[in-house]
Image 1 (tube, rainbow, N blue to C red):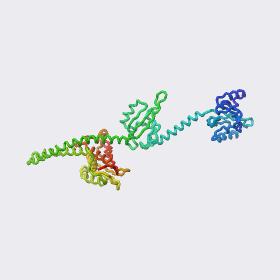
Image 2 (image 1 turned 180 degrees about the horizontal axis):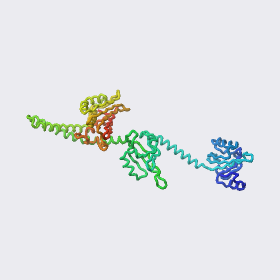
Image 3 (image 1 turned 60 degrees about the vertical axis):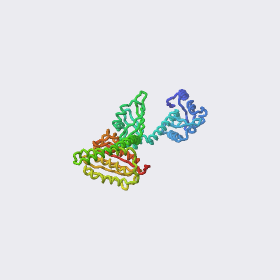
Image 4 (image 1 turned 45 degrees about the vertical axis):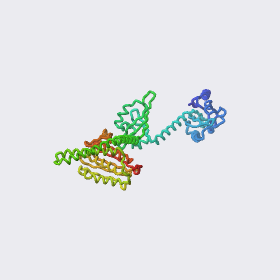
Length: 478
């Protein structure tokens, strides 16, 4: 930018003024334009004669008049000799022009203002880009703050540089607790091996487990995109992460339901074919036993009868899998049912040095169910007791959660290793020496018939928790 004093030669000043690529004007202290250059005319759409008939105030945007007056007042008082600001002007067509204005005050020997030298650079396009960027940033912020999906930005090393507020709803952390941390430190180790070490695509969809602040793992599905610079180097990675834990649980329930259906169909055919010959075999063995008056073969007969009864018991469990119970569904008290079961198993618990602790909400509502659900809790309590050969405590909790009753059976037993936990509930898979693997599967079928859910959590050497939820009202038919 040039001042009159820097161009003492009037001819040189005039040449620079007329040919400058930026808009220039000489303005009186009252704001009247006395000289303008072609660049300013082009910028504002006026001819030179039209502009000279205007004052600065008449072509200034109304919202910027006060700002302009503030600087001019300071100049008149002698407080400043130059100033610079962004302000808006009105083009002849009526549209708004943004300009970067630089003003130099030219004074006489007494210090009075002779005129202002104004120099104006058109920054309309730059301001439009800034406004567009601001709107995009506001939109991003609105999306980030209100999206249920978690938005995260990582460096190429996996360090979190940004995470949206929805992390609190999904993982329990505040955003600042996650910033600066390596995101993969929160992933399940198996998923780090499966995904991070196989990164070979710039855009991909991945499913993995990530640790909640409370310690358990949450299933997430993420769409990730690597952002590279012109040299092809990764600048950062953007991820949009969605909690799919409930979806995974639903898919697992569907898989289990399909398994139960297939096993049930198979079991129905097998059970009916086996039961008839079993009845005949048991009858003949009882006949042989009655003919053995001296009791020489008594032990053999008792063992055979015992084993046939065991086969018959397995067949009975297979029939439970084959079809829903035909028992009547009525409103029943879960509290009374659990108390009856605890009384039934209390003697066995005492023999094993196991203490059963009850934690029931007061006045639990009645639940629509049939008596077969008792078998579920008997199975769970017996499993819990058998998992604690050296004694311990079993906690039975029952409480109302929204429109459901939640029952938890928590033991202090050996627990189940993670690799075996995935197989629990599959037909004929058991961790017991004398088990059939059908007890838990039967229990799952019964709970499924009640429109409920069963979830098992266990850790080796830390015990097992089985959680069952039963809706207070369902559409189960007799």
